Length: 67
Image (tube, rainbow, N blue to C red; front, side):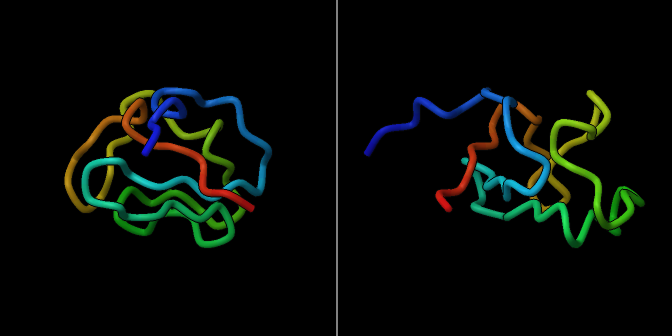
């Protein structure tokens, strides 16, 4: 298994991102109600201090899910 996607935030606006710690998924179509991120917000537009709402992992621990 390869984790070379960790920390890479170059994504398209509709890419879903998965936490490499707890496997929670950030879906731009849903946003993040915990952090009050509105639906339609791409991962690249999340604030730098945003953390996984499930396990508190930083942005750098997320990897792009395959299409």
